[in-house]
Image (cartoon, rainbow, N blue to C red):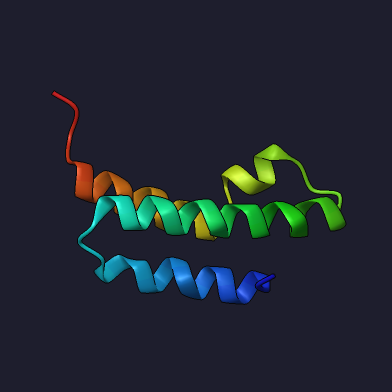
Length: 69
């Protein structure tokens, strides 16, 4: 399991990605690790949803997917 800092580093690293499915696959693994941390620290859904790592991945996914039409 990765540390919180390692998860943030992965969120930063994914900013150079160009493959949406790869980003989503990576996000899935990272968020699983983040939930382990959240449960250990008695944090909830809001903490996970607004975590810097999640924001980084969400921003990249939006960037690759483009605007809604």
